[in-house]
Amino acid sequence: EETFAKADSIVSGLDNRVVIVTVMVVVVVLPLALLPTVSALKQASRLGVLVFVVFVITVVLRCLTSTAPETSPLYLFPADPTAVLLNFPTILFALNSHHTILTVFAELCPLPGKSVLLTAQQVSKT
Image (cartoon, rainbow, N blue to C red; front, side, top):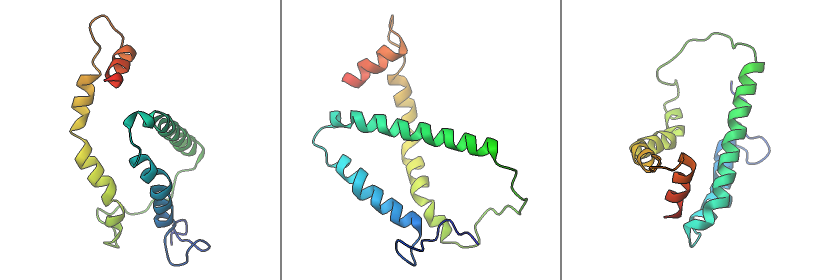
């Protein structure tokens, strides 16, 4: 039985994930989406990069310090079909975003005589 995702104190009967996602959308995403200009997102972008760096460091440290889990059977589909819906936003994001990587890469190709960082700075100004 998975006990991490169950909320006992915040809202009984709901998963912690639902509460956390709802709070993050209302407190972080909605105000950022309602900003009048994109240039105001510079600081939020730095915060986002910092969050990803902390996440990667945490995962690496956790993997290095934890013991190997017990072996269990691997299933292609979960026993509870509604569990697929929890990963649906991630799947849609990947599907909608995968084609932009080539455009971003092409924009960040170094300009003749300039470094990659100066090219990224020039692209971000336009």
